[in-house]
Image (cartoon, rainbow, N blue to C red):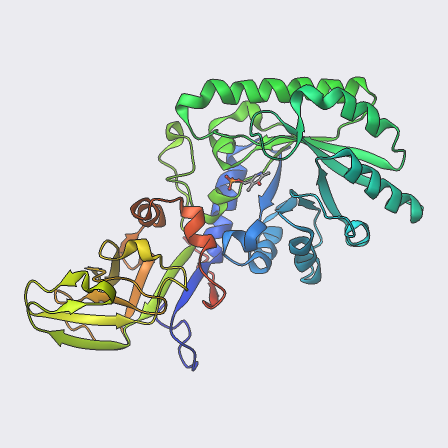
Length: 386
Ligand SMILES: *Cc1c(COP(=O)(O)O)cnc(C)c1O
């Protein structure tokens, strides 16, 4: 851990991505589902900020059957990196990307008939057929064909001879919320009915899939042919899974670290940072950190966040600025310039769960990992034996 970026001349602010933990979490998911159920690993949004290529490579080795991305561009990045397994593009494609999908075998999720027709035409022009998945909107209200409009859609797709509906999917709105359990069951029922409608129209559906992380752990009846976990693979679960699932041995994959760049002693009564929001109640030792909200350490954590230095928790003082953050190290014995500081994740025996930081920031852990900017290098480690 202390060696990351050592010997390099880079600014010492990085996220450490533990691919061993990623593999562990994949195995935890694998153990939760029947052997014939496939796993689609959601690696959209650069694997929730963890780095899509490195994560997909490792998950492919662990046996991930499919990968899920949000855009065709994300799918192409995986193909360029040599990912060979099927890739499902949740967001479909934009007009003009049909050939890219066909050529690089990126399977789009279809939400609109005109998109299905455009893709089919591109396939016909290449004298080939194209497989797609169709999303059924059973209550999320976002993408997908509305559950009460699937009959027309299924009928129209029959006329697209070079298009094959390989999969049907839906996405849960609240599989993690006990007070929405009834709604989730309704989503499942609507989906099952939609599958029957497609079958009645002569479509042979090879893959049905519904479950995100929360449903993978809480709803075995929604496993169907494939599950689609994202957050759980990255060890994000305290604010993701259904409460009835806990506790569970999923391990955090990302730790956010930096190093002390300057130490200063300040007298009682002095203020710190923009807006002078912190006033020293006594003489204090303050450390300046080369990390700020541009890096993804959110400004809302000003005067609220805590970090780990030398095995102790140290509070953030004053406003977090774009590139810099101040912490109070008055109670950290022997604090020095160069000390490693952990903003979230684990450091020896101590850890700061990212879900706790997210709660403090009023958001979801996903937004925190996705928010780590491109300025912050991802350093991959693999602590195999656990
Ligand atoms: C992001 C996503 C998932 C994974 O969701 P998690 O809550 O991270 O497990 C699954 N399916 C679809 C369609 C998604 O967009």
